[in-house]
Image 1: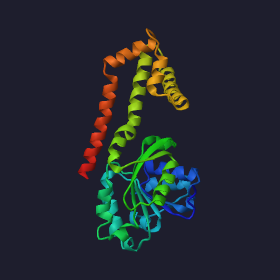
Image 2: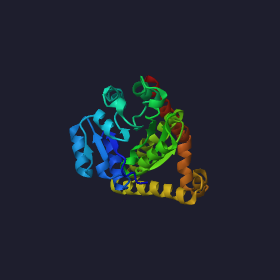
Image 3: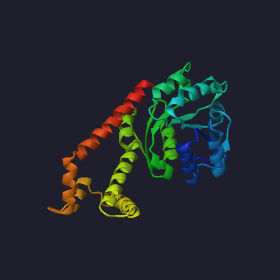
Image 4: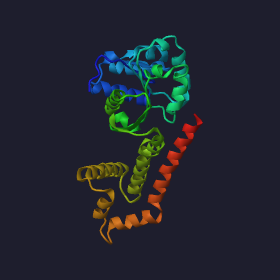
Length: 285
């Protein structure tokens, strides 16, 4: 879906912001002339500007004033300051309809509304729909998955525009905001669980006689192949596991050790802990 004519701005040009900027331009969803960025670190702005040819602006408030879609890609602890700067700018009240998309982890929609909707009636607030997104780091290589939740003022077209933006860097699911903590625990933090497993498999390979490079190649290829097999066959992980586990064989010997060490319950407990921590951070806002 091309969005030519609409201006999109990114407040924050760190890893995730820069990745999304590059993705929407590579996918030709937006022209560089219609994309703008601001970051408190001038070096980040200069780098993404040189790489993509997008426009660079001098403040969050200026970017908000000129863009149809504004994506907040700043750290949660910076959000209140950024939103306050936007709200206090004299151009805020004169602005036409703007879609606001936030990827700040743990910063709830109600908090964004409490700042931007202060002194606005429902008609005015209706011109500022808000969508909160939980992406994950594989978006940096256009292989991410994001979950998004819209507030009551976001129309179908607003959600469609947000999906088009996010799909440039991977898959997108829509959900209720109260599900985003679970999303954070599962897919937001999920890449770290996979990297931890990779670390363990490489170390194990080295311990049983493989060179570090060999162990790494075998581990990564095995994980990629297993995921591909599941995608292509559409079989459940339980069924695929059973097919590769012969009675009395090598795989069964390994799985018995994992079961004895409570591997599966430990993973389930870990993801629940991440989700609960996400909920705690949201409540602190």
